[in-house]
Image (cartoon, rainbow, N blue to C red; front, side, top):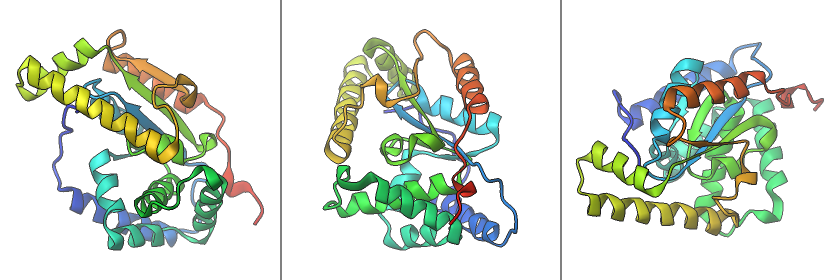
Length: 235
């Protein structure tokens, strides 16, 4: 459970706006060759949504939260349209990423196929923050900054109590249930331990680091890292 992001537009409208803009980008002769993304995994109540919103605003990049990614991945028409928003070069990059996942990916799950294509497409377009849905395990580490946002249980419970005006008992129940669901999701689909710090580039503890400082740390890492240029490969 997270503090809900401030949403002015419906998720459907936001998805349509992204698709239309990407379709227009296909017609551009020149694009920035390196378009890294930030993928954010998080424990419920750790204030990751606040951090993601600040990063998207400060870096002037897109924000795809779990709700939006899930909505696209579970809608066949939207999934197809978002993949079709890629030009030939970027579609080739997406195919390369999916191939590289190989046997580690559980392709028997139809949902995972859609999810991989959606997250991969967002990653290929680049310049985005993607929150949740295993994005850190889908995209190559060469093109994304993988962040895990954590905080002690008691702090997360307090955050949820404050955000949702919930009782301590209800907040703790929601936090622990969501916590278990997210860890199970990563284990089921990616056979990975969500809490293994070696799966990430940065682990941010929002109990010790406030959102402003956390954003500065992530931005400095994002802006100073040497990113791999997939589009520079000869095809």
